[in-house]
Image (cartoon, rainbow, N blue to C red; front, side, top):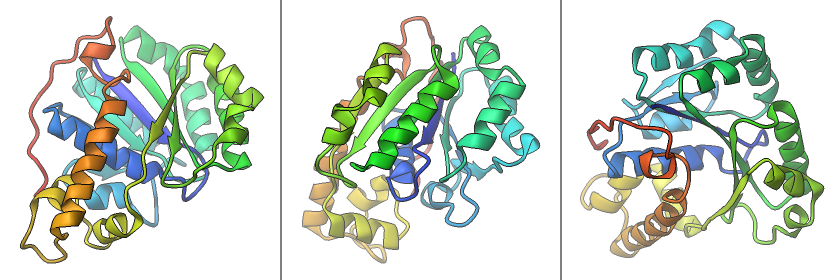
Length: 249
């Protein structure tokens, strides 16, 4: 069956789009088909880096968000990635509750993952509480400590927000930091992570040492992603028919 990954965090600048891009590359490298949705009106970084795999969707329009469910109806084995822009939690929650969507997706056998991407500030902790209060028991919560946006997550670890999330079965993971200069070069060249590792002669190509850094970083990230409920092996009640996708060049 299908998985749907809402990559959020509500704050700007915590690494939501990087996480969406990372998950997209994971699906590609493991030959699992996916469809992406980019909700950012201004930057559209997910669509820019993975053109051909992602399309725009407007979260302040039910008709726009309905495209996500239309995709599931036409392809019940789809893996979906929804890159949520900052301050989109309210319209998303309204859309989900208006149609009793979580119950519908459960009846369809769809695995629903809410990713909460965090920096090490207090705001991310408070926003986590709002997320779990909104949806309660049912979906999976994947809490991402983004080491590229913070070093000390003690505020999170000592919080009631985390304790409550854990009681709901939340999974706490850590995404390591990619060397800042290397990530900046990738972003400036609009490269997928695959292209960053493999293209040596293209415009904006990374140096040998930067390509090696990306390779090591992706390996570490994939070890984290491999333990999450995003594919068949980790979702026992779900059967995903995997389809191959081309690698973005």
